[in-house]
Length: 305
Image (cartoon, rainbow, N blue to C red; front, top):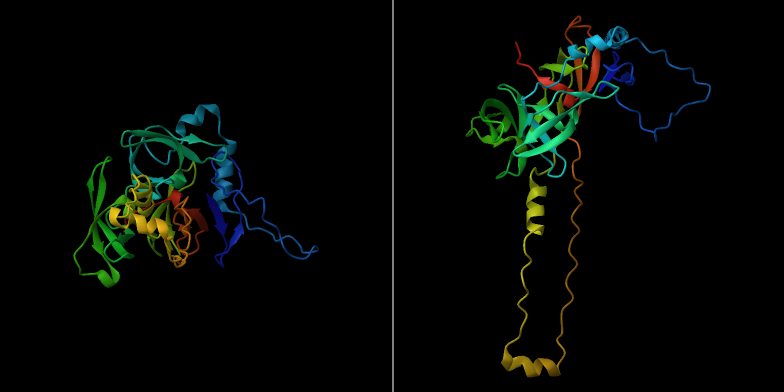
């Protein structure tokens, strides 16, 4: 998923399927163009990266299919976003990438003893790295706090992280966490790598604007609610004492009308954790490099030098 951004940091051209290698975003069919009918079309500045992808695609032949660059390697440990639970959990890649006509890969994975098939990049993220900024949901405080990953513990079955508290909580006891209570932060000037398709693979870039991965307000709450609803309902104990039974039959019971409960705002389940990340490509002039908009599933942290 790739969009070119001009000098004023506004999208100047939407992605299109230029080749099997391009990473594009499909336009909404409900989107309407506004403006006077006689408005002249805006001339778009050519994108260096799109031209390069198109050039590589024109030379693609059946003999080069084995040279495709995967976003993830076979048996690589990753994290998988469950749409039904709304949280991240540890997983393992169990297949090579299966690419659609636009160059977007999907993978088969193993989550514990279960299998999931054709999972797109929007539901995968790499194992978080030491030094990577993130948000940690603190259950006692019922809020997200800024942290930095200081270490990885466990394995693909039970992945966890040691954290270093930042901001207002800096200096307090450093917590530990599982993947499900962490969301990635993309801070301005952070060095990252972006996936540009099966021909170019991962390329180095620099974040130019802060962004935070989407997450539910209380991660894991959906699982807790489902567990409560699935429990056996309690039986009502409304039998009266035998001594009062005759009197209760003569006089109808007067029941007070229950007070109306305040309606709680309905929480829309999070279907995708993706957020748009603006990056400047580093394989060009760092000061004048092309700025791209990438979906966070195509971005991974790289250690700052």
